[in-house]
Image 1 (tube, one colour):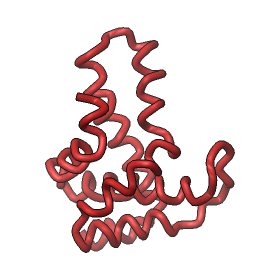
Image 2 (cartoon, helix red, strand yellow):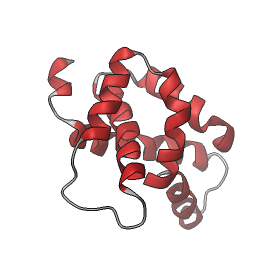
Image 3 (spheres, helix red, strand yellow):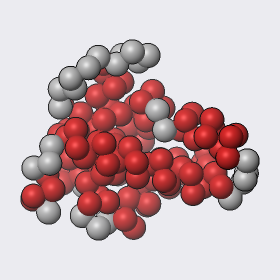
Length: 125
């Protein structure tokens, strides 16, 4: 698992973004089958602003290792500047994504789903 940490915050956030997208799509497809509508709705859940809002719900649920991964993702320096949100929101969202990417790459999908349900469950169930 240590080798996964060495991928860095950006890589973990990149994978985590995809993991979150899958989780959101899995929930949404149970309610709607029009893929045009689904894509628009999914984007309201998987964007940096929304993810940043979820961080305050996520942090108390994390163990020590997951918190360290959150900080790794949050603290990486992106090569480009976010356009539609503040840098703080972007970094917080990257930390959240990094946690989900890390858990997925470690094979801890059950833990990732548990955290996802705790953070997004009320809105998607």
